[in-house]
Image (cartoon, rainbow, N blue to C red; front, top):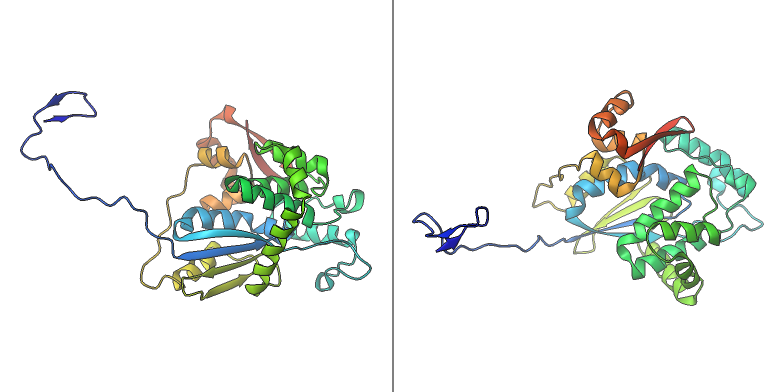
Length: 303
């Protein structure tokens, strides 16, 4: 006898029904670790976001991802902070950031460095570590929101009031999280990241290190393409042909991300800039989003 789940009718099972079968519901074991070394105020990391999102979305089922804080700016001192890019003080950063924004089409205002310069990237990094330890599923959500506020909307993410607002927006208690980020434990966790970053041989951001079970792997420095990261992953899985997952629809992606720039949607769905407007109109209900512009780039925000 069997009860049909669709009809709700119970009766004879029939001769062709298999009464016993063997199934395997275990997920395939992830044997690869991916370390993403970054910093909340790293402009090239902001530029990488469209590519990294697509790569993780398509190939994340093959690896365990670990986001590490790299410690870009502890404080401003008397000497140069980044001689290679000619950065000795806050005002030197703005021009460099604008160049990165114009080249990547991920908008960067940068005038925060003139009006209200960031004192240290360690401050938002400690907040990240507190969230990562207690609410790991929200850590990268916080990092994304912090970068939006800093790069696009010119907010100083080293200030308590700005950080509290961002943490509240991701659904946590901002005041409590910021308070915890000032305790010694948060600094210890941050320096544990720094130690691992040194062990991985990382000297700049963004850097992605992909390693297998034998602790052998590849180190990819700077922003690359989805194909570059996928090829590196394939090298570490020589006994199988990696296959990308199907992309989610724009409605689902926007609901997850809340805000997306044109460049991000173009990269994710492999469309041209000229196709953006028609693609969005076709994919989304008209009353589900707003369209805005920033520094010559379009972005959409979920209502």
